[in-house]
Length: 439
Ligand code: GLC
Image (tube, rainbow, N blue to C red):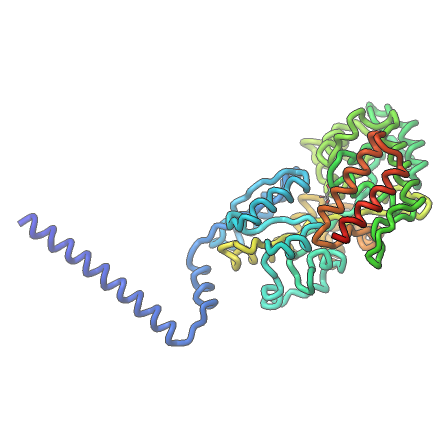
């Protein structure tokens, strides 16, 4: 009797399963017949099912990233973002992405890309082209600073959306410095004479380690003395008296008594740590350091930090154009959800969080008129800052940028360690980049 009952129950269950399956199949058929396209079916699925996308970016010392992800997830309950932290050094990050994407890994869906990567990643077929998403969502690329859009363009297509922009700035201690220096020579003078005041141990901090940040610092010196590495006509013009003078100025600073003994190991993180500990009178860094400078929990210099343009050489003041974009892995299995996240991060709401919580400069021009952004930082409220961003010197947009950067890193570094003269460095940069470009 009992057996009978359970056999009947099982049969019932089986019939129910078959019935439900038939209904489902019928539905699918019906929608196919009604002419639904593949994309519509995918969209329906995205709405119903919860999707998890993996988002990778470098170390965030500000806490902005967590808030950004939380705000996105709240607005998109069907998309979860799993965060993957990458190294702080942009070069190391780059190499990890290259390893993953060249193996066609789909593990990472969305990633932040340094402005120097999109051309290379587009050429290598690592990235998803974004024009169809941009068009479908009616995004006007003219709302962004042109330099940041250009960094994400290659072969006439948009591969990356601008998330925030960067330009090198001079940080100074308002409790020590009366008038910030206007020229590199004034900086050297003040750094020497003020080093030691208010418990400081150093006059100046910069990024002199052999990595991408050194290239950024060097471009600022070189441009401020009127030099260039590659000109508008794509000619290598590095071997000039201007470049030599600039490298000599860097040598003078790096070999001075007012920088840390291990300045040749300094990247942004070392700069930031020493700066918020109150160890230095001046520092060169990107805008994000304003967030940690004013963080009551971490910083000993809250309220004592001023930010201004970098000192000038013979040709004026120059800042390197930095910044980060977001891109989608070509092999992502969730391109629609990935795009939603990219759109959010690089749209007004996302950029506002990056600016107010992370201290980084928006790429959307209109945000500089936004009162919350202006209140978050005097830098963002200052029209001069927007001019610095617009005038910032870009690094070459080319798929062989990593090669060019390697040459600069090696040659500059050996000039700073004293293994070669400034003249030799300029000459080597010239011939080696020429060689790389003709390969
Ligand atoms: C910053 C800039 C980036 C640059 C890097 C160098 O992150 O935004 O463009 O390459 O610093 O360290």
